[in-house]
Length: 252
Image 1 (tube, rainbow, N blue to C red):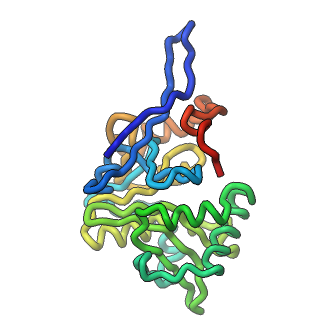
Image 2: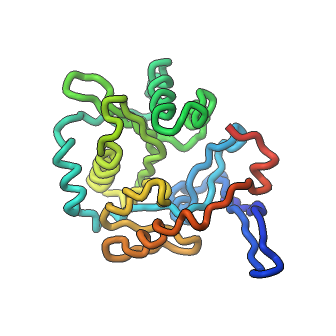
Image 3: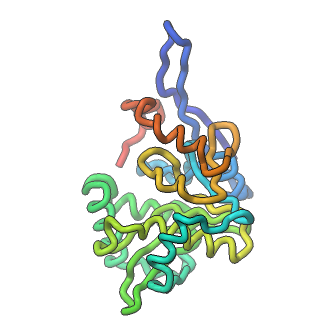
C-alpha cells in the first residue's frame, strides 16, 4: 500500500495547528482488508480517484461480538421476512440502464440531483474493489434495494446503498446495515465496515459491537458513549475548503 498526505490548512500564529488529508492507494499483492483496517475508505469524489482511499472516522462492527440490541431488534422486527437477498458477483451482474437509473433516482431524492452523476456510478463499478451487488426484492419480486459490497475472507464493506421511493423516510437503511452484518457474521468474516461515522449518519451509533477510527486506532466502548460525544460536536469542527489534491483534480 502507498500512502500520501495533502495539505488542507493551518492556524499558525495562535495555535500552531496544521491540517492534512490522508490518502492511500492499493498496490499489487495488497490485501484490501489491510487498507480498511488502517482507517481508510474508498474515495470516489473525482473522476481521477479510481483506486484511491481516504482516511476518515470510519465505523466497523466486530462480528464475533455482534448481537442485536433493543433498537436493532425493533428495526429487524419491522423488515425481517419482507425481502429476499441475493449477492451476485459483480463479474456476473448485468449492469442495465434500469440499474443505473435506480441509483440516480435514489441519490437525487436523498441528497439532491447534483451529488451523484451517471459517471460517478460508473466509477464505483469500475473502481476495482466491488465484489458483489446485493439485491433485495419484495414478495412480488420487485427490487426494493441494492447494495455495493466489498468482501474477502476477513471483511465486508457496504460501500453504498439505494432503495426504491416507497422506503424513503423509513428505517430500511438501518435494517440493511443489520442484515449485511448478520450475513457477514454467518459466513465467518471478522468485520463489517459500514462507512463513515459523523453526525450526518449518527444512526450508526445504535449498532452494537461498533468500533470507530480516531486517526490512530480503533475505539469502542459501552453503548458507543465516546462516539456519541463526538457526533454531538461535529458541527463545531467543519471546514469548507479543499485540500491541495482535490484542488488539482476535477470533482464530480
